[in-house]
Length: 289
Image 1 (cartoon, rainbow, N blue to C red):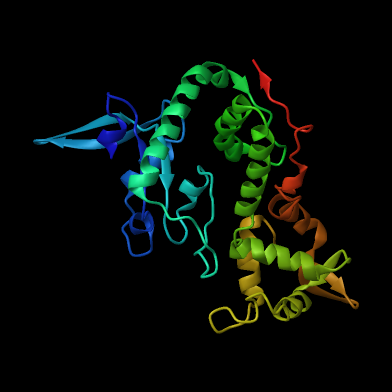
Image 2 (image 1 turned 60 degrees about the vertical axis):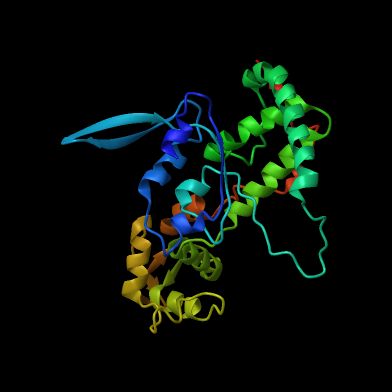
């Protein structure tokens, strides 16, 4: 695949099916392929490799940029997902009918559509490359890098495509953000839920409230409930430490709202996505350089 991507005759479009066999739990890490895919989402990117020629070990930088579509079961590594437009699919239900694809019949139609798109792209590539499309405010950082060229294409196509592309972008990015949070982020969210309006809460009272959350794992972590030591250990990476607080006239160990506030702000909100319905043609207009 390295050689194919670096082919001087032109960059290919890689359609990589059953990718779960490459990165799934029963597969080896395949770090070289991961490195190629991670690097290849940017134009002009290269991937480094070590090559053994006889007794000599040399390094080489191979072009990594090309269009890639990955399909597979289960989750992919986060480093790859963060560079992708993720479209989740479901198995077709028995009552859902679709038109059958017949290569002999539908193949020529696909080739005709490809040729039309190629002709259109040759006329459009120059203005699209130099355009700076408006990006919905909820799409930031690497998500913006991934979606910017697609929004440029949509703007170049005109019609209803600019609106549809932005609605899709907001919806798909929001769907990715709803991934199951890490256990640490889950703990922060649950603490915020049970903390109440007070300025502080004792450790024992906090643990009691966490254990009562039916949809959370704190009452049974590998056969044992979360205890004070485990709570402190899980909060330590967020620079949150237990402090002496006064409760019912006694000084006990607990947690203060002011010590939790920063972690709540950084890891829980405000949400990094908004409703897809906010992406309207009036809100987002393409701008050219």
